[in-house]
Image (cartoon, rainbow, N blue to C red; front, side, top):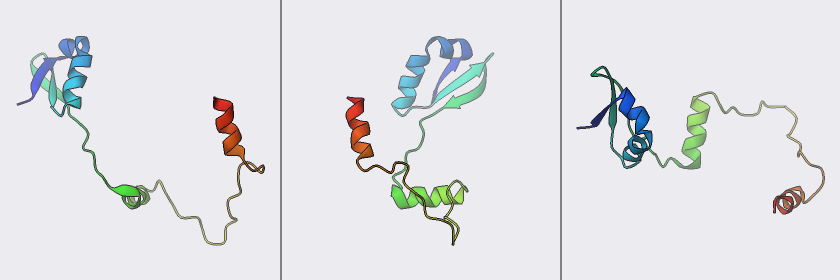
Length: 90
């Protein structure tokens, strides 16, 4: 049975509520004694790269490059751009 917090308690003890959710427990938020929301952990899936690509294509967020279109060009024409970028960060 999930623990129930009033909206006032949930706001005041948000860190505690979040810790319980991270630990795998569900928490119910009530307003004037009536349950209005539930916080629960997000289900994690190990779908791998192929699964992610398939899911993104299904959502229309990832599309194949149209046939006959120009190939993508590098952003930087100088070789070693990544190395210089990483060196500048230190």
